[in-house]
Amino acid sequence: MTSPAALLSGQTPLAVRMRPVSLDEVAGQRHLLRAGSPIVALADPQATSPGAVSMILWGPPGTGKTTLAQAIARSSGRRFVELSAITAGVKDVREVMQEAITQRDLYGQTTILFLDEIHRFTKAQQDALLPGVENGWVILIAATTENPSFSVISPLLSRSLLLTLQPLTDEDIGVLVDRAVTDARGLNGAVVLSPEARASLIRLASGDARRALTGLEAGAAVAVSHAADTGEEDESDDGAAAAHASSGAAEITADHIAQAVDKALLRYDRQGDEHYDVISAFIKSIRGSDPDAALHYLARMIEAGEDPRFIARRLVISASEDVGLADPQALGIAVAAADAVAFIGMPEGRIPLAEATVYLATTAKSNAAYVGIDAAIADIRSGGFGRVPLHLRDAHYPGAKRLGHGKGYVYSHDSEYGVVPQQYLPDELDGKHYYEPKNLGAERDIAARLERIRRILGDR
Image (cartoon, rainbow, N blue to C red):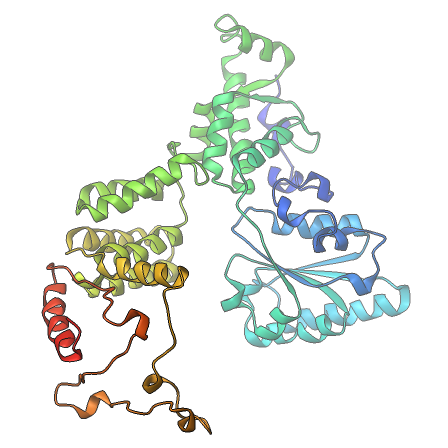
């Protein structure tokens, strides 16, 4: 029987050992790996430098950003330098640039600079990358889990391709897990994986390859240790177990996975039906004013490892869609919860998420603003719009007044009530009502005020 020490001792983590050595081994991201795509072209050893472009890889953890960069380096034969924004500074970047120039001039070799977590670089640090990217001293491959539009400076964005990675599918994760069990770089057949354990790993991974392989490695250690302790006891109980024992391979079960990760394996898949079922139940419980049910589904998502930013985004949407102006504070509370989660992280982030959840579930509800914007958009898409009335058009540029722009416009603040009888909608839509407030919460006051406003506007 293989011992845990022989299986795992002295080795780098399974997720690192199983990194693909070529693009052909990469699981998922098919949209980025089509023939002729920038990544495929960059990995082509026959490609010339002028065709190579710097790129920013944006995606959730465990989707293959580092894997793609290293596969490109191995396939292309280019010199590969890796820096982490956590530890590197401007001095390190400049040293890489200088060495890249030397390698290019002396040996004709192109350097790929892989910069992990570029969003952690300050503006000054990112500025240090610009000369190398612009002059072609290096081909930059930068990875980030944050939206580059907010975390990467504009000059660097404009000089790089932005490629978005998607969370891996269950099928992708399954391929990686199966390969790791049998591959010589991985567990090399020292264990077998039961269908239930495989399914548990896939659910636990939630689209993160690193999480799946880490769970597999930990589960293998538990299974081998358990098999060594029980010896021959299991052989008479199950034919499959006996076959595994005779081959020297311990079987990993779902219980082994659960023990290894020290967490109950919830039936929750971030890419599957259960993911959508739970988030749907969460939102509908808030809409239905049941805080207990809403907290239950919130807890299920948190314990299953759901991205708290996803939960926070759904709360912001719910505050606008289901609560609306019946309680104008709701949106502010939801946004504050989202900011708090981003600021303090998990597990403490569960507290502001719970606070916002309970507030939204227990406050007054109205979808009037949501219904109104959808109705307006429906009119626009069906061609239901006309020209802006002349008196509302911009009259600040030369010649505008000659065209009649602004003529007859009445400045609302000059009136006693701040409202004047004046047409605002195009002629084709004059008198159309999109927003119809409900007699709930703060919208009761809005409804009464809006009725008076419409009466002054001459629009009943």
